[in-house]
Amino acid sequence: MLKIQPLKRFGQNYIRDKNTILKIIDEFNPQKEDHVLEIGPGTGALTAILSESLDKFSAVEIDKRVVDDLREKFPQVEFICADFLKIKLDSFDSSTKKLRIIGNIPYNITSPILFKLIEERDLVEDAMLMVQFEVAKRITAEKRTKDYGILSVLINYFAETELCFKISPNVFFPVPEVYSAMIHLRFNKATDNGIEDRMFINVVKAAFGNRRKTLKNSLSNSIFKEIKIDNSEFDLTRRAEELSIVEFIELTKIIQSKMNTSV
Image (cartoon, rainbow, N blue to C red):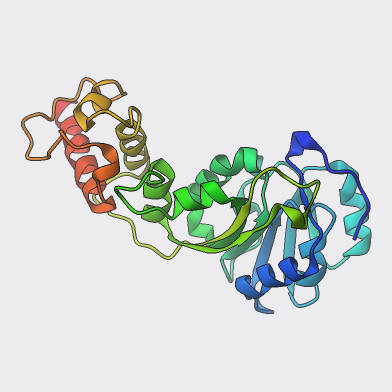
């Protein structure tokens, strides 16, 4: 493994426990013919094992300090020195198979990475990501629980989600102050053809905008404040955390219809 000091500005915490690395890869279960894209290979802990069994392996690393060493150590891997949030996934040759994504991602940009994967999900088969344990609980939460929120609804609308296992801070250098977890997202869900993706995202964000208030109050304080849906059969006296994904779809259809008729 490469010897280099992690940088706080990149949210770097390197995995140093071989058993954890093997457990992650076993859960990911890469196949020889897969095209795997790793986010943030760092010193190459996951890269070293993954590169042994893949025909097509790419990795995106923002830290210029490590890229040359990674290229020298793993010549069979395509390394791109860039910010993952700024690259387009269609720049990778995935003409025959969709990308499979894996990574120990910076916790401070977890949400932007998740939303990028949602936006470009047509190119992605699945993604196995290390995130903060509290975030993993929110992603996989059920309605009417304290962890249920924007991420719970949106990620589960666009993907099948699984919290695979919890990870101790002690397997990292430097040791973080929080527990981590591996989540597995499978982008095999069919979304509702009757609504636009962006509209659904905006409605969910608006509904949770004032978590302790009713839907009526939350929506009236959002970008949809001009939309009058009081006369609909949808119960707006509930709070967002009480709604299932199916009900959020219904609410989005109502708002989208009202907006279309008002144009």
